[in-house]
Length: 261
Image 1 (spheres, rainbow, N blue to C red):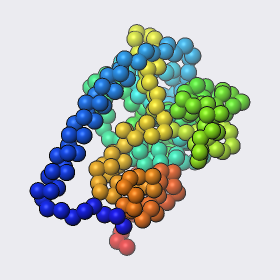
Image 2 (image 1 turned 135 degrees about the vertical axis):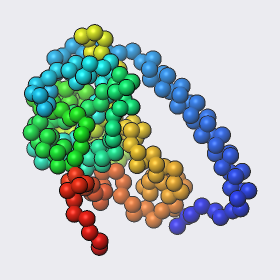
Image 3 (image 1 turned 90 degrees about the vertical axis):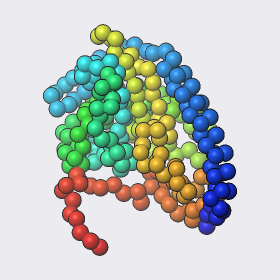
């Protein structure tokens, strides 16, 4: 295994300060990128999307709960499934209190294509408290390109069409029988009664939302996935995102059995 070199504290400080300069430059570039994201134009949402939730049927504007902004996590949960996507579930486990958003006029919700009854049962089983709505029977998932079905709308994911994906080597994103769901995140802004779409991101664009991946990126071994540099840092046997070896708990923490092995 290709582990980091062992050096003195003084040598380590030299290398660390060099990296610190890169980190500070990255922070400045990230701030500039965030500013450009805020400068994006927006699109008026003209369709009357309907969602099922704990209080019955609601519209997109209702999901804001009176606030100015809405962040939607497109949680993969297909109608025929009895549980949500394991990777989306792992992300959901990292969602805590939402006060930091709500005090800034922003509401967070998850939306899935599964019927609300399945969503509610799974949410309770997992012990989550964030708002979660069903878009079952709506065009919402299709229009925001997280449910792919060419019979409904031309296939597009992460701003690439089917032909562009087919031309990529090792394309695994768009393989499978239609319709099928993928994950993403979308942002909306409300001005009076009007709702506008301001931003959507997909694939690794949602990395910034996850605690685990960002924490492990700070470690010497990293995510332990074969694409990472430096090569040979790990045996290359660690599971990548989507690997069935990445497990998630099946119930809320307080309902799990606690025992020693």
